[in-house]
Amino acid sequence: MKILFINYFYKLKTITNVLKGFSEISKKISFEIDIKNNDILLKDIVEKKIYNNYDAIIGIIPFLQPEIQKYWDILNNKLLCLAIIEKPLNENNNYIIDDSYYAFNNLLKILKNYNYLKIGFFNYNWSGYALTRFLNFKKVMINCKLKLNQNFIHGFDINTNKFILPKQFHLSWKSIPRNKQKENREKEIKKYFSKTNLPEVIITPTDDIALDIINYCNINKINIPKDIAIVGFDNNPEVSNYLKILYNKSFLTTVELPFKDIGKNSIILINDILNNKLKYFNNHILLKPNIIVGESIKKNITINFDENFKKQLILEIINKYYHQNNVAEILSDNLEISKQYFLIKFKKLFTINFTEYINKFRVEKAYELIKHSNYSITRIIFEVGFNERRIFYYWFNKVYDENPRNIKKIDM
Image 1 (tube, rainbow, N blue to C red):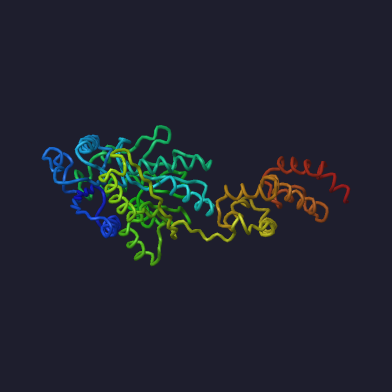
Image 2: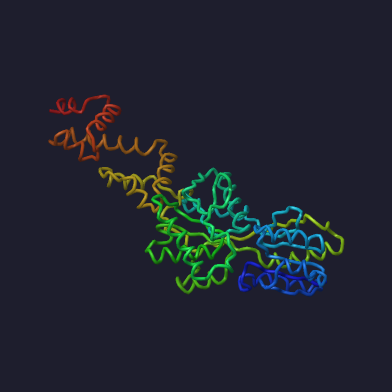
């Protein structure tokens, strides 16, 4: 059994584990493999009839380019073809890819445990795998009832699922000088970060994109994960090693693709098809990835709301800061969570929204001062944290059904 392996996307270092998978299965299944790393065109394989030298082709192919999909379909009628990592546009093709829906489902559970609610997706790759990952990200967000905000999404339209990228990103990387590629990527990141409203965490479809964002954050003194958290996808060993040197620890949270299993299953699937154990077309295998949790999402959370949330701690902080206008921000900062998440959890714990609770609390403090101090009503209003007399009188009347001036007279 002789196989041609074509890799149009990845450096060989990135897919080392695919090659390891080939090697491991070779102990059980006999085959030869000819590796072509981006140095042979599908058009040449068809027109020069190179396919006659092989029993099967395994390919990591950019199927969004119509000409490439066309020649892949032609090859599919000449010999056995198997796409890996990148999903073909034609569902009749055989493919083995990662189950990115499964990955995002697990990833979003982890992010919710870290109290992230505002989640974004950033992409500048015009590729099938980026599109597949975005679609599954979107599906999981909807299923988890998390809001999809176009302002947090870069590279895709959330309504049409179409790419929103400048023309140069549609071109082959080979046709653009390296320095220009870098400049184009930096422009897209700068455009994203220039927005006034950013998500709490950015998910990217590759570790390379995550690394570009991390470098941008470092240059612009944006703290990860305190200011914004970053998540990659594919567990690229080059990115991982670079960040370990930079941070002296496992830094990037990412999705570890099952490259070795993809390699092994590719040979098994081809062997089974050639031995008539499986149909010739339309074989699809989705393999489950693993989530690697790194420092890029780990906030120093002092409280786990699901297990150890203590009402007493909140009450102590309120008692100390109730008179300040930004008491909600003080509370969320002390608990190291977002203000939005704090307000949601507060209502669940106290069965009352925070605004009502804090205004009633201030009114009770005001009542004590009215009864036991010589302060004027005006001074008391501002002393307990109200900015307007109108709001104070509204809440005082609601709680005590009385005018505060009458209480002052009674006490006198």
